[in-house]
Amino acid sequence: MDNTTNSDYLPENGPSSDHLPFANPIIEKCVFTSMKIIDRDTGEFLRDEHGDDRMFGKVMVKNGLTSTFDDVYGLFCMGGGGGTNGTTNTANDDEIDEYSDSDVEEDIDSDGSTTDEDEEDEDIDTDVPSPTQQLERAYLYEPCENGHICKALYGNVFLGKVLRRQNSDADWQTTGEKCAIKAMPWDRIRDGLVVRRRLENPRTEIAAMSHLKAVYDSTAGDGNARSAREVMREINVVVPLDFLYDDRFLYSIMPFCDGGELFDVQNRENFSEEMCRTLIIPQILNGLRWLQTSRLCHRDISLENFVLDGEGEERRVIMIDLGMAVQIPYGEDVKRQLISSQSPCGKISYISPEIYQREPFDGHAVDLWAVAVILFCLITGRHPWEHQQKDYGPNVGPNVLNNMYRHMTGGYLVAIVRNTEDVDMSENAMFLLQSMLRADPRFRLCLEQILAHRWLNEMN
Image 1 (tube, rainbow, N blue to C red):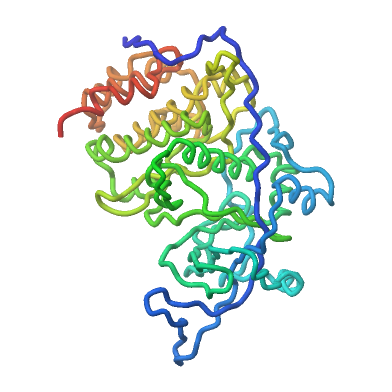
Image 2 (image 1 turned 30 degrees about the vertical axis):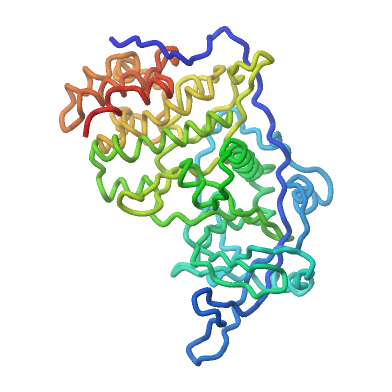
């Protein structure tokens, strides 16, 4: 049995604290307008099939007003009072906040326009921004075949194009850059947080991405400006373009990743262990490194919460969905502390034992447990608890302590995998997983130990 000690783990009897609240994030007001757009390559207005200058509808433009999330939430969701500081969405004790798209409606039409009711509001709000405002970036809805790219917990994600101009007197120009526009109705946000008491919180996601970007900006230090897409591909975590709002919707705008979810791509391509070792897992671990540097715990890492961007050697793995992230507490001695126990959250099959059993937990260790589950799934094409799912259903959690689970997470994973038919895994991968999937986090490898493991450092 492998009893390698986690060199970074906090003592079980050490101090534990509630996770730190995020700063109230800033969001910017936007209006929708119709306009002509210049082709950046020709310098002329884009034309329609008749050769006439084309008028584009539904261009999102900032109007120069900013506010905090809590103030806007209080205005549109609480009748002008109140707000959300992350405490209104405490889950019921027995609830696991699984993703569900069944209650998401089409609040923005398939062509990217709003409903008739929105059109009435738009007539009031579409004043052209003042010439004194420096507006360098705007967004054009680009309808997909099915209207939107995908559904999200609080709304839908649409495809958009980024527009730029040099100054407020210039016309908007195309950039060739695509973006993903997550449009979330304020009434659905309120319903999710107050009525349904969901743990995933748009405020948290915005605040966590803003915090991560601020940490990156403070550490980059080379003086070279990077686009959101370049930063995202460097740190393997989604980075925002903008957070906008109007009186009906909150808009979270991010670089568009064209490769789809890691979960779907893995099912199509059937990644080899070599690809996992050289491409997929190192990038996931780099994203974890940036989270740890930013003192963040994701709490909802899964195959579904990674997307791919680019192809071939330029393909990047991007971590998304920080709506359940928490800030890790640090003591006065600048040492990381355990996070006080709380209601389990995330996808059940990825939850670490200490989270599921409502114990104080190390923010680093619980995220790395989920990465180990991902690695097992990618190499074998099956979930490590697949044997339990057959007996207990698809949402089996780590509290189902049958003999197989206890042995696999107790240091005997190598012996079990060796005696499991149809599992093709190298010896080094087995030993790495055996040291990552440990129910006792004291024996679960930390990030630095994983990065130094011989499986990741094999010669090509």
